[in-house]
Amino acid sequence: MAEKVIQEEKRVFMTGNEVVAWGALAANAEIMYGYPITPQNEIMHYWTRLAPKNEREFLQTEDELSAGFTTNGGVMAGRRAFTATAGPGNTLMQEPISMAEAMRLPTVTIVQQRGGPSTATVIYSQQEVTLTTLGGNGEGLRVVYSTATHQELFDYTIKAFNTAWKYRFPTFVLADGYQAKMRESLVMYDPASKGIEMFPTEPFVGKEGTPGVDREPGHFRNTYNVEEELYDVLQEHFADYNKMTPEVAEYKEIGSKESKVVVIAHGVVARGAKAAVEDLRAEGFNVGFFRPVTLRPLAVPELREVANNADKILVVESANGQMDRLLKEAIYGCSAEMLSLFKPGVGITAEEIEARVREIV
Amino acid sequence: MSVQLAMPNCWRMESKPHKFCPGCGHGIVLKALGQAIDELGIQDRAVFGCDIGCSLLAWDFFNIDTIQTHHGRTNPVITGIKRANPNVIGVAYMGDGGGYAIGSQHLVNAAARNENITAIVVNNTQYGMTGGQMAPTTLPGQKTETSPYGRDVAKTGNPTLGPEMVSAITPDGAYVARGTVSNVKQLTKFIKNALENQMNGNGFSFVEALSTCPTNWRTNATDTWKFLEKEMSQYFTVGELKAPGSQNEEGQANG
Ligand code: SF4
Image (tube, rainbow over all chains, first blue to last red; front, side, top):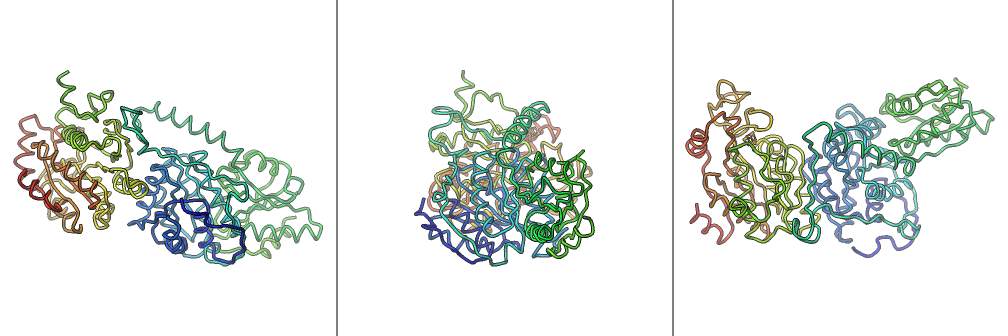
């Protein structure tokens, strides 16, 4: 592996896509497989400029199916491999991700959400939550980090590789076109300088020695002959996932456990929600803020505490209730009334959120 | 014992007898592949990828690192591995549906990029595992579950000529051949040439193997062989289509 990419901490001002490329580089990602789709293209643009100087590889594939399946191959070869996509590309990406889910492949996928359904709009939305958390013909055995700032894009791109390789579930960084295209300042760093150790990688195939002579061959499959066999394998995956959950579930909050009204939002919308709640609290309103950082798995015990204490929860998202459905499952049976401010595919300002809260407090 | 001696070294005894139907051509293609791997001494470097369809039954066939992928997606998985670890000798093994229908974009683009992997497509003119539906390779007039009155080329087009297509879109350096399970010696040679081509870093190497599916053809041994030798071989020409350097002469002498 090449020299450290980032020698010392530096403050930079750049677009989110550029941040992701640098984050992947800092995380010692070794190869990116990608296919063009807006608004994630510049991740590839920056990666292809940085990669040769840092002994990293890139392959532009024929579509997102191929980008996903080559990424599966890359991690099976034992490399930190990743891809990035959005919208209809994310739809195609779900097929390779379902293989990754079945075979516990530590892939990392960056999703820059755009409007949907279908081609829709190219810049901004939070409508890929259902797809990213629960897509494919499976059980949603993945980890999804929803970022809100460029600093987090950098931090969680690094973290995604460690989560993926440590727990062996496909891991996503879920952002959006605003984060992708907007410039913002952040501090880039070498993970080691913050005490972050990159979790070691290991090849599934192509290990030392002759299979059947020096070692057992690696036989990796996602097909089973009998129902019971699949059932048993899945029980193991569920147990691992449940064991992992308290270690990876993350959230941020302000007074959420002692407020009568709590605003829940994720991603960039959480920035507006947080600003609105801070304003209202300064005015003396009994309002709290909760932001799931991991949309999958959710921080369920904490959410339930919030939902049992508050009278009202206001769910705010740039989708027609995609996070809301995940929350309702998590807090089923809790006492709070669920209210919403949904603007699918459209940004939501702090003022709008503040106005909505004033109506319900 | 004599049966065991006939098996290639890299075959996995624990998974034999294999899972294919009696009279199936897959076992013969995998024998040719096993022999080629033995002869080249690459059991430790080979990574075998199998597709969906009957090819998936090979997921524990060899004492070789193996990945069973999705329908049509074996080429990209093996490509991903090879790109990440060029020391591996990657073999993507699939049926005609995986190669020429659902995974055709992957085959075309891997070929066009001259991806340094070996792809083997088993052509038995229909979808085996799903119960004998029409495939891109179904012969004109051939009856299948989804062409019960015989393939109508006016409505469904002509059978795909895979090696001819790959040969047309690959640059120099690629290796392309069509063998048949009725000539194992030649098929083994073609597969060996293909693997060697990858080892030499020349680029994409592709072998189509004409194969048998008595189960879905609903044929006895005699008719199975007749269909393979008479009907299939007539439409699908056996031989090397493209071979860099000296392999060309060798192969032709063999073909
Ligand atoms: S269905 Fe046909 S191709 Fe499949 S194993 Fe049986 S004979 Fe072979």
